[in-house]
Length: 50
Image (cartoon, rainbow, N blue to C red):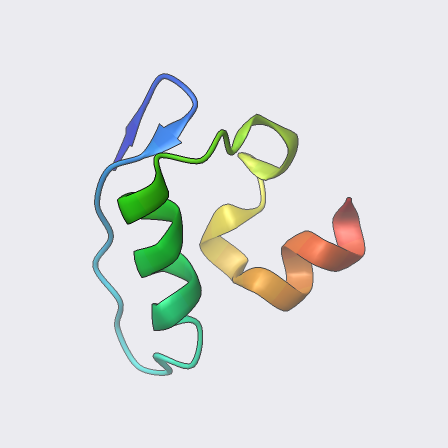
């Protein structure tokens, strides 16, 4: 779930390799605007797209 430019929740199915990254984004309230369109694909994909 996204509220503005903050990740507020996530449901992971299958591969949960990126679960810590998603948890950190949720807890920190980090601005996700730079990779909002690719966040569903995980950290490596977001890093490559940025």
